[in-house]
Image (cartoon, rainbow, N blue to C red):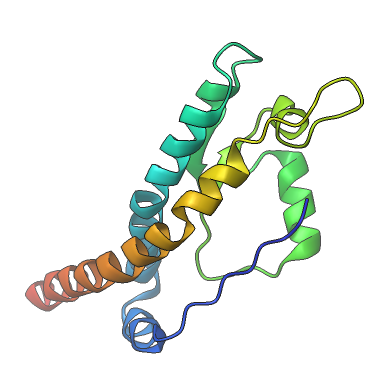
Length: 144
């Protein structure tokens, strides 16, 4: 699988403010924002996935977890970041469906979902991150 890298300029201020929060609070804020922002992409992939093959439709999800094979591949490719969220399927049939094989032509569902939702997802992350950071900061201030 090809690795996709997306760069967003102008989020340094968000990163600075996020890192000023307690680590657990910052991770929760990032996790909540990423999950909410990625759900429309998962919904798009579910709409594009075949409904009758291998329960693929039901297996598409947004999560911080990977299955053991995905985890080992991810560990080989990346260093651990502050917070990560994954959109896709843990169903092995998903790879065959997406890329095809000698018996089955490719019928992509994740790539078209990514192509149509990547920029809206990035905008959702940027816009809602400020809101969630401010909300967490207010909550921390009340506690103090």
